[in-house]
Structures are given as C-alpha cells and as structure tokens.
Length: 176
Image (cartoon, rainbow, N blue to C red; front, side, top):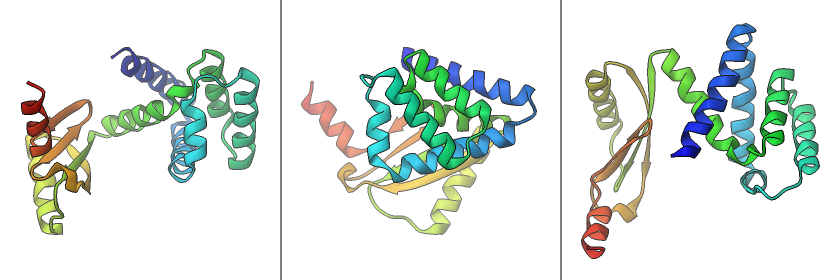
C-alpha cells in the first residue's frame, strides 16, 4: 500500500506544480508521450522497473528521452527528481496516477472491465451508461477479453476491484 500512496504523492506534486505554472496541458502532453513510449517499448519498460541502475545511467536515459521527445523542462526535472530520490522505478504507476488525477478533476473516472468473452458494442454502451448512473460521474471504460477467466468478469474502478470470475472463485476454493 505504501507504493500506491507514494506514487500518488509524486503524481499530485507534479500536477500541482504544473497547475500553478498554468502549464497543465503541456505536462499532460509529456505524460501522454511517455505513456506511448512505454506502451511501445518493452525494453524501456523493463529498464524503468529495474531499481538497480546507477543514477548516472538513468540520468542519461532521461536526457535522451527529453531531447528526442521534446519534453518540457518541468517534466524533465520531475523525472530527475524521481531518479535522485531513487523512485524512478515507480514511473509507470506515477503516470497512471497522474491520468487518474486529470480525469478526477474533469469529473471522470477510469475503469477497466475484463470479460471472459467478447460483447457487442451496444452491451458495452449499456455497461458504461449504468456505471455512469451508479457513480454519478462520467466513466472512461476500457474492455478486454481474458478467456482464462472462464466465466464472469473483473471490474476495476480506481483502486477498487470487483472480481466475479469463475477462475478466482475456483482458486479460492482450492486454496482453502
């Protein structure tokens, strides 16, 4: 749990700095660029998640990323603070927390729904509408299919997870 609160604090801190500097839109673009890079490069993702890299090596990577992708000064300095505090390996979680903050400020919530099978677009729209009504917020929901669930689903809204999958129920029975 400490990891989650720590990553939230870093996300809130950089959010607040950008908000006060009236450069939140610039910071959002930087975070989007970084998210795209991480989604496309499994090597960079592995590098970031490894906390054993030397400070100087990580700084060189930060400098290269900042130069190649034209990151703002605030974002580059933020990445270097993470490195200095030996928290660079939390970067992916901080990115997710930052986007959750942005959505929350807009009155929206991010949700993911894993299903055991595909569903129609109209069913997806119905689910999103029902969640909107229940939470009284706009839901940005992404759907994915995981056949290993057998039947049921896993819904995650923020830090809350509702798991109704047969896979989890069977595992719970086996572990008792």
